Image (cartoon, rainbow, N blue to C red; front, side, top):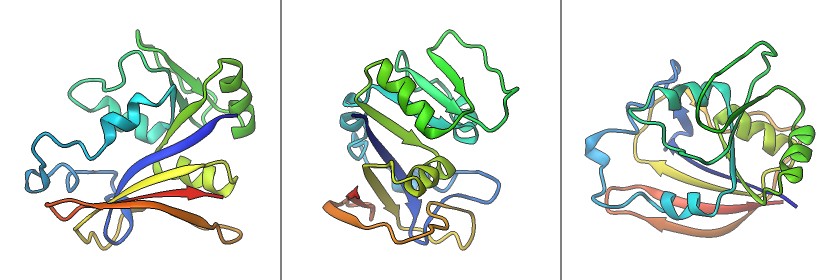
Length: 177
């Protein structure tokens, strides 16, 4: 059975990006931690595949270099005509999450990184997300793209651990279910 996990940062007031999608507040030098990636390297080593929303994928493409190397990436989009050519293992998917799970299981993926605010919300709504690591950045944006959205019913989480960093970041891991 696949374990779906998210690893994401948000402002203290719960936004993952500005309204225009910018994450400039997240990459500020003021928050730099020398030689510390907040556990991301360790997290990504345990990942077999990444699923991400199209908007997040297009943000990743704007980075100086493509960060995922040979790790398979599935880009989820509602646009059936969305195309992308790459030498990296990138697949475009526009179906239901349960169908994606069947595809990933056939490929024998066990641990999948879910990335992108809307996609994380969809996985939570479908009760498919198993774990989430949230790193709270000590900044208030006042508005933007929220990490969480509407849920038809309460979603219970079990706290796993919380770490604090010298730059004010607070990182919490939760199990959903």
